[in-house]
Image 1 (tube, rainbow, N blue to C red):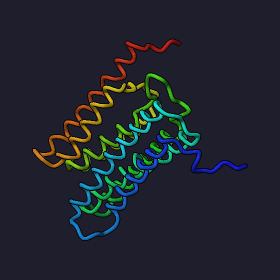
Image 2 (image 1 turned 90 degrees about the horizontal axis):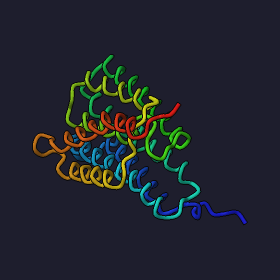
Image 3 (image 1 turned 90 degrees about the vertical axis):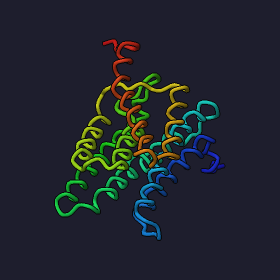
Length: 233
């Protein structure tokens, strides 16, 4: 008897589907005209992408505690492509493009297409290159936070373009980044929730703190791994 597709799903897969739906909703709030100010639409989209990142971390934790579904590896890559690839690219475009004209808009599109291509390669190769103690290349969730926070606080377009190029390259670099444990994931989750709740208070201090904490992880993690888990040739 042919197995039902629904029965292939595990509890972790349900959370992965929520991740994808949050990313899709984040895109809809940016491209579909509704009777609220664009600033509110951007804030809602920002929160939805951050919630998708939380779901992305939570599905892995649930998978380790429950049974692993047969669709898990495939489903995660497809969901992350929506929430950590397409959604942040649309977020940047919606934030910057309306204020630009001509060549500036074209430049944004080209750089975002490069970022999207690198994200697709990164996410599709994740499970092939998966390791126990580290990620190979900058995690897609980290790149998404860098991008949407900088766009949300309104950094200059030139800086955003440079950041997109750097992040795109970092996604594919053969550099090892620390895989956070349960405690570090819990701290990251709290920071993300605080950022969602207090996102536009105190001159955007909470999104900037989240970005600063991520920058510390990005810069220190590879050196820590090199000392703790040296690569043996």
